[in-house]
Image 1: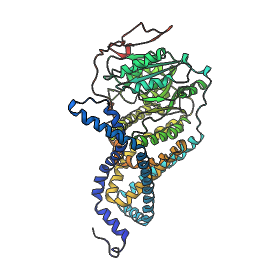
Image 2: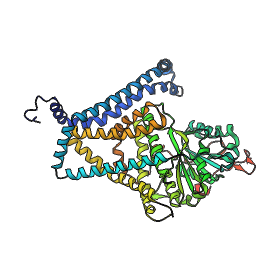
Image 3: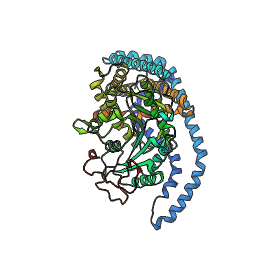
Image 4: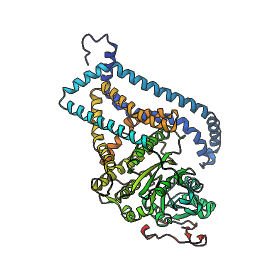
Length: 559
């Protein structure tokens, strides 16, 4: 590419044209480099857990000596890791700050060049359309930010009610191949400061092929009548496991907790309080944080994302009484609200196929449609395990994205009708924003990629500035709630999403009819052979360990 006359002595011009000349290489290598870099950042943190996992590995006698020596080496290395991890953490955050400062400085330096890019874009036939589209997208985003910020500023969680006013509560914990973690989940629930006479805990083993049932049984033996244990003969999915638990529930409120989550002692109390104080509240969303926060850079970035998703997005939705999704990790449902729609929820289909994903968003839709309010309770906290690797993260986000698309379409079928007497403006605004994001985001992403190929420096700087602005909002929310320097990871996460996860919005839209859980095992356990009783239950006199009633094997609907 020829450099214009008179510009050979301009260092900035030389740099610009050099970058433009290698634009294809940049676009190809950056998406590959970032996941590799993130995996390298996780390596040191994972080493200290390798020594623990080696204890569970049975090796042949030929390798036993090597294993012992290697374990000793890892133990020695893991003892030195905390200080190294702290130093690495500081270095990462310094690099993030330096990178953000460099991007802002580069944007200032190339401000004049950006104006030239804009003029050049206007001369292209589709350039004006793209500029107007980008301006519209930006305007909507700014208005949404102002609106949600105002609502979050007004938001306050419902104060806890007294113990004597609490409603009876049944907590359902569906589990599939969860292993020991389900035991920790049940222990945390049993330690709740909820009146024991009003709390029922139901653990449902959804046909696991590992030792999940053994851990449930262990929790049952230790906790006694606090826990009801159900073992389903085959795996039919989370929705059916929840349904089985609901059928055995005695409480006025049903609470769902994922088997990889743990709660604080006051969590259930705080979660139920809005329903005690307002009979119109049909469901309450808990506040989800990351449990395996120390397992790598991805869980730490997700913790920042979760704080933004709950303390900003759901908090703003709660102010209009219409939280769009009550998370399966922690949510409460009024029995009177859920029972009339339970069969419809269980048998939901999409494109003629059973809906095996998005059970939390689907049940929220139905409760809203029935005329109930759905709130978010910030002081009801649960900690859940999240993926630590790139592949697992993609599977989780892909499942969420498909569910988001499907249930937004389902909500469109009633949200614009007069299905309740009070204002529906908040619900409709939230739904329209969701639909705009679903429809416009893929086109905007493809247009940006095309522009990056055409003008890598100019549009690259624009994209980076956009990432900085959006990440700053996320970081501010995290800092306000958590007050630690992990807020800086919002910038790393913003770049990570753009480079390595932005394809999910397009792919999920093209494959929204797929209902696979993705993170579940493909093997289905057809029959159980455990010698442990299939089911424990509460009767009028409390738990009766002398009675066993195997579940119906033909259908969960017979429970």
